[in-house]
Length: 224
Length: 218
Image 1 (cartoon, rainbow over the protein chains, first blue to last red):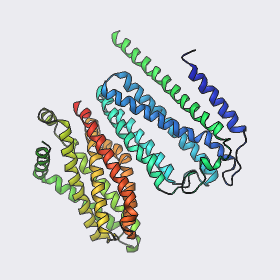
Image 2: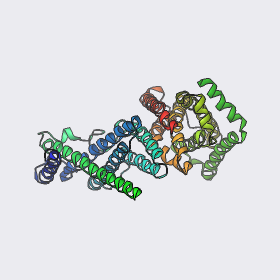
Image 3: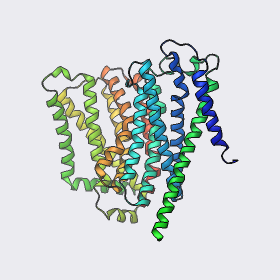
Image 4: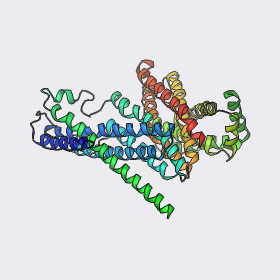
C-alpha cells in the first residue's frame, strides 16, 4: 500500500479529470467552443510522451555506462509507452482539428513535427528488429535512442515556434494563457497532466515486469 | 592522427574510381530525370519546385554517399583500425571527409541544376553558406548513423529509415533559407535560420563524437 500510493493518486486524479473535464464550466470562445476541453486530454499526451522518451533516454545512457539487461528493458518499454502516448496525442489532436480547422490533417507545422518525432521512434524499433545479437542490439539501439532524442529537441521544441502555425498558442492564436482568464482551466489541467504521466509510468512498469518474467521463463527453459 | 586518417580516406576514395564516378553519375542522372520530367512545360519549374527538387536530390545523394563510409568497409579491417587508432580520431576524420564530399556533391548538384533547370537563386553568398552548413549537418549526423546501420542486417534500407527522420530538421531549415535566397532577401532574413542550423550541427556533431566509441566497441 505504501509503495502503491502513486497508482491510487493517478486513478483519483484521472477520475477527477474525467468528471471535472467534462462537467465543469469552460470559457466561451468562438470556433473553439466546447472543444477547449481537449486541453485536458490532448495536451497531457504530449507531456507524457516527452517524459517517457526522456526516461527512456536516461536509461539508454545508463545502459551505455553499465551494460545490464535491466536498463535495456527499462529503456525499451519507456520508449514503447511514449510511442503510445504520441499516437494518442496525434489522434486526439486530429479529432480536435476536425471540429475547429475543418479537417483532421491540416499540414500544420506542429502536426508534421509530431509525426516526424513518431517516425524517429518507429525507426528505433525497426533497428532493434534487424540486429540478431542481443548485446549488440541493446548497445546500438541505446546509441540511436540518445541520438534520436537529441535530434527530436529542435524538431518539437524549436522549429514549430519559428514558423507560423494555426495551433493554439502560436502565431497570434489564443493559447492556454488567453483562454483562461480566471484560472478555472488550470484547476483541471495540472492535475490531468500529473495523472496521465503517472498512468504512463504505471503502464511502463507493468510492461517491464512482464518482460522480466518472460526473461526468467526463458532462463528456466534453458536449464530444463 | 586525424590528418593521417583523413589522408587515408582520401587515398582510398581516389583508388576506387568507380565509386566516385558512380556518385557523380547518380547526381547527374537525378538532375537529368528532374529535367526530363519537367521538360514539357518549362514554366512548371517555379522557384519553390526547384528548391524542393534540389534538396531531395542532395538528400538522397548525401545519404547514399555517406552510407558507404562504414557499410562499404571490408569485415576485419575495422579490427585493424581499432588496434592502431582511437575512436574519436576515426569519427572526426570520417566526418571531416564526408563534409568535404557532401560539399563537393552539393556544389556539383547546384551546377547541374543551374544547367538543366535554370537558376532562381539571387543571393549566391547566403546560399553558399547554407550549402556549407547543411553539408556539415549531413556529414555529422549521417556518419554516426552509417556506423550503426553497418552493424545491422539489411543495412542499406536501415540507413534510409534511420536517417530521414533525423535529418529532417536540418532539411526544413535549408528549405526556408533557400526560399529567402530565391526571394533575394539577403542576410538579415536568414540570420535566425542560419544560427538554428549551426546549433543543430553542433548538437549532432557533439552527440556523434560522444556516442561513437560505444558503437565501435561492439
